[in-house]
Image (cartoon, rainbow over all chains, first blue to last red; front, top):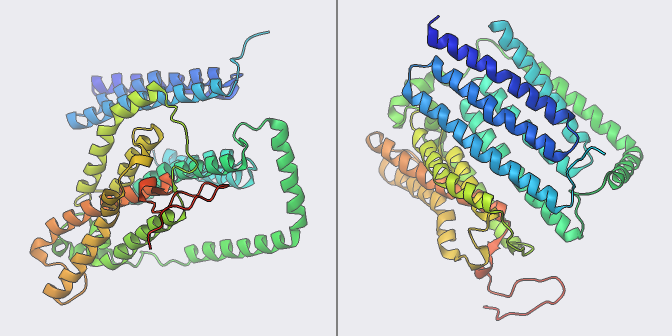
Length: 100
Length: 343
């Protein structure tokens, strides 16, 4: 196993906790806004680590470009859709959760 | 590694079954649609695991990416028409609906039992059929591989779909056209009229994504000749771009000219029929393509079909014809305005 592959594996392993905490957050957080907050962590950082890890496993530059493109697209789509969900929730009069 | 994959497959199958059950028993339509979308995404993953990337791509693009929004649009129209918002129904109201459902289900129990029994019979029959499939699988894969050189493309799926069994695809394209005609006959879009209220973030994201979506749609059509892809997948991606334009109010439907739309909708079927006629004239057989020109002809056909399929699916989403296409004033519910009807 070469050094880039080991670093890649480490990156993938580093990404897993973000997905895990994002999932737990989405299941356990009290309201829609905090859940969205948890979800974006998985999309942004978790997927980023995963992409970096996968990029280090391949020799083909074309695949690296495709992987990075996937990350950028997911970033754009997820931030825009999260914004839309939150906006709609606010329009419907759902108040953000606060500790009493 | 093998065990890990088997475990993954098992988990996937169980999740699919669970999602299907949740989808069916959910009394909240919005929730059911979300379950349907999740089901479609996981289903396309299952197709990938079964080494059928073409079906996976079609499932992800058409089965999920487009059917989900279609359902959501339909739900929105039902709500508008009913004058209430089912999406934001408080929990109490939802429970009431649920109990009503349950009451009705109890009433229908003989029918339900019959349906259950028939479903079990069907499931048993399917399981039995799968068990008696002879192995190795009989099929035409070898024949297709043998005559792939004559088809003009390198992808066996495209070769079968557009060349060897072009007749089936011709009919499919016609069915889509028929669907578009039906949708256009029902009403005009947007129905009911809506006030544009688009978030600037959404507009910016659509501006960013749109060129890429068009590129990917075209790439999928082009790629169909030698890899996974083709007119249906490319067309579905193209229609996603159109749907994004529609929901972001970039395309103003009431002012849209209908002639270019009509031309676009019929382009694919028209090219297909012309090719079929060309086959009769030159090769003396319906849809038979001359071997030396098959490649370019198929690419041309796929591009035309991809464009038409994209437009057709987007027309389904828009849910009606553009208002400029109407010869009478649109039906408005209470006041039946009689326009200058052309006879």
